[in-house]
Structure formats: C-alpha cells, structure tokens
Amino acid sequence: MSSARLPGGPVATRSVLWPRRSIRRSAPKGHPGPASTAGGPGTAPSRVGALNGPAGKRLAPFMAEIVSALERCGELELTPEVRDKLLRISAATIDRLLAPERARLRVKGRSGTKPGSILKRQIPIRTFAEWNDARPGFCEMDLVAHDGGDGFGEFCQTLDLTCVATGWTECRAVKNKAQRWCFEALLDIEASLPFPLLGLDSDNGSEFINDQLYRYCTERGITFTRSRPYRKNDNCFVEQKNWPVVRQNVGYARYDTPAELEVLNELYVSLRLYVNFFQPQMKLVSKTRRGAKVTKLFDLARTPYQRVLASPEVGEDAKRELRKTYLALNPAQLKRDLATCQARLLDLANTKPSAGKEVKHPPGPSPGTIFRAEALRTSFVMQPGVPSRTS
Image 1 (cartoon, rainbow, N blue to C red):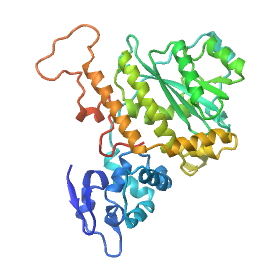
Image 2 (spheres, helix red, strand yellow):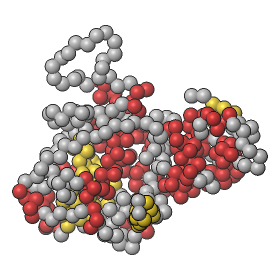
Image 3 (cartoon, one colour):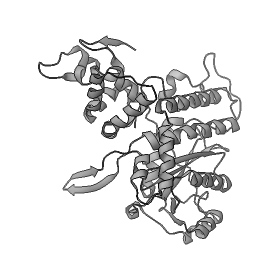
C-alpha cells in the first residue's frame, strides 16, 4: 500500500483516505481541501475506519463517542488540533475518504425457508406497515443459512433477532434449522436482552411455526405473528441486519462441523457487544412523495445502547448494568477478537475434508481453497488489519 507525505501533515495512506487524484491536485488558496480536513488527522480516520464503521451519515454524529472510547482504552492518541478536525469532519468527507475501502464483496444470498405446518393459520399475519411499536421488546427473527451455495445435507444456521424500537441485535449459531436448536437459541437470546421480550415476528418456516414456540409465547403472553409468504419486506427490520451483521462478518462459506459451530458462537459473543454498543443506526422518521421524487427523513444516528438508555420503558437496573458493560468495553479489542475468530473460521473452512465424490484436479491450488488475500472478494468475508468495508 503506497503512501504520500502531504505538506504540513503526517504520512497519509493513499488507498485508505482519499483518491490518488486528490493528492496530486493542489487545493485552491483559502480552501482547506482534503489535506486540512483529514490529512491532518492522517491516521485517525483510518484508525476509526478500521473498526468497520458505518456510513458517513451514521458515523459523523457518533464520531465524538467513538473517539472518546478509543482514547479511553489507549487505542488512539490525538493532538488537540487533530482531534478538533476529526470531530468537525462532515459525513460527505467521511464517505469520500473511505470510499475505496467500501467497494468490496458483491455477493447475492439465497433463501432456504420451507413452509411451516397448518398451525400458521392460528398465527396472525403482520406486515411491515403495522410495526408502530415504540416500546422495546417487540422483535423480528430470521435464520441465515451457512450452506456455502450447496443446500445438500446439514449445515449451520444463524438465528438473528432484532428489536424493532431500538435495533438491538442478537445472533446465535445452531447446528441446523431443527426447531429444537432454534428454540434453545431463542431462550438464550431472551436471557441476554436488556428488556423483556414482548413480541416475536417471523417468516413462515417450520423452524418458527411450530407448536412448541406457539405454546411458549401463549403461556408467557408474548405476541407471536408471522409475515406474508414470499414478502421479505414484512420482516424488513431483521432482513436488513442479515448483511451488515451476519454476512459481512462470517461470509458465505459452508460451516457444517462442530468446530465451526463453536467458533461461530464465540465470534457472536464479541459481535453482539460491538454491534449494539458501537454501531450507530438511523431510523426512518417519515417518507414524502412528490410526483416521482421520494424524500426520506431519518433521525439522528444512535447506537442500540443509546436508544435503550433513552427509552422510559426500560428499567433503571438494566440501564445501570448496560452502563457498566459499556465502560468496560474496548471497541478496538472487540475488532481484534472478531478478526481472530474469522481467521479460525477461514482455516477450518480450508482444512476440513470435502464431502461427496472425490474429483481429481490438475496440479496447482485446489479450486475450493480460499486464500486470505482473496477472502474479501469471495464467499468469505475477512476483516483485515487495515480499514475494512463498512455498511
């Protein structure tokens, strides 16, 4: 990776901060230009970007919070001048400087949902337009398959649950989509939520539409609803988490061994803390159509942790425990823990024996081998040591 020394500033990583032409072209007199806006902070935007941060409109309001957290943990040292510039950086500048690191991995997923039983007639349908609950505890859930593009046999699944009001997200890996494992994972998630579970909304898969989960929700007074068949937008709150939370961190490789299942759950321990405490999100406030133009208005970007603290429906004891947890967290260390688990997943995926009929290949690397240098562009997403793609 090449670097360029800018006048009056430290060495800036060219591929991380801004396009090559921005370095070659001198800024007009009286205009700060890229060098003054982010060249001074130099390594600061790249260090914050290395945390796989969100888009500029979400990162800019959260910049003061994440910088304070990194400084508190000893991960970032800034001069007063550099810190002031970093806190004043605009959302557009963030997107422009980190654009080269965001153009990675364009892979489409597949659906593995199978229809549930006749029991679904007893479970009411709920569409995306009916989610108007401002109270934490009403959640959507979905399964993400880790079949590696081959739906044959058994493979691991990730149960993804998202709170509609706060965006709080929990993930658990299960060995397959049997209702037994999904129910046990759901109980574990419920025990980890900082608020009571009040409602569940799922697709029409048999792993959710079953008598065991239906009776559990009925006995505990939990509202249980389902989406319309083949209408993913009815589960839009959890569907939009499948890419940035699950796929972007574990990829599209096939995981079907007990060792891979263990590493997945170990990864999700760090991921839940990183996503809920250090990933700000924007919620749609209104949408106005004027002819062919649609104008969307979003609220200020806040993390799920901040939204839970701002909710009057959450008890003070739960908020006190969340504050303790937050002050003990190091976002940079969480990213290192995630990278360690991702490297282990990559090694396990490359070293496990292939299933099915043995096929002889010509000399050279095996067609199924995934290399670290190619991981960001193939079916496995690795978070590198340099700033990575953001959502």
